[in-house]
Structure formats: structure tokens, C-alpha cells
Length: 91
Image (cartoon, rainbow, N blue to C red):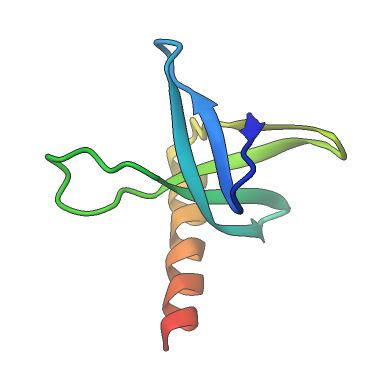
């Protein structure tokens, strides 16, 4: 994970080694884990709406890493919490 000079922008590498910029739209804790909710800064033309990527933080201090959430139940809980927070923000 690389931080960018622009606020809330991080660069992640996909499985093909390509760098993709994401804007962090929320950071929150749920069930004892910390999650980042992000959207790509350049949305593909064929996308109907922004897709939210949620990743879990592992590690501490300066040694943190964002990891994909493999467990479907954990991912659903994390996404539900994001939706609740998003809804509260815009109400």
C-alpha cells in the first residue's frame, strides 16, 4: 500500500501487478477489526455506479497492511456497517 500526496488516496497493486488508485471514503471499526472502504479514482466506463471495496487492516503502527476479506460473513458484516454509517452521514 502506498500513500499518495493527495488526501485520502492510496495506491494498491492488483494480482496482475498493475497499480490502481483508490479514494478512501471511510475507515471504521466493527467486531474488533478496522476496515477501509474505498472507491477507484478512475471508474471504468462500463461501470453503472461506483463499486465500494472494503479491506481489513492487519498489523499495528507503521506496519499495517490492507488485506482482502475472504470470509463472506465477515465481508457482509463489514459492508452492512459501512451502509449504516453511510446512511447516517447523509440523513
